[in-house]
Amino acid sequence: LTLPDASTLTSGQTFVFKDESGTADTNNIIIETQGGQLIDGETFITLESPFAAINLYTNGSNKYFIF
Image 1 (tube, one colour):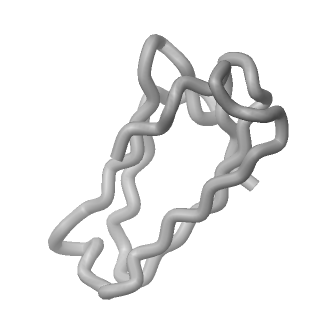
Image 2 (image 1 turned 90 degrees about the horizontal axis):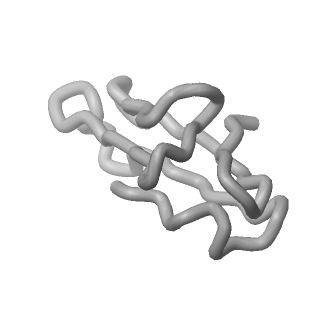
């Protein structure tokens, strides 16, 4: 999954990603940024545990953060 450019979003906008099928251990979910943007300092994150979930928010400019 590729996140949209943070500058096209509203500051504080949130995203929830959830492995509803419980297969992330064999079918990892990779969430990546574009254009050099970061998620808490990383260009991508991987959900690799069954039923894993992550909440992200953006500053509406150039970054994403995990909460």
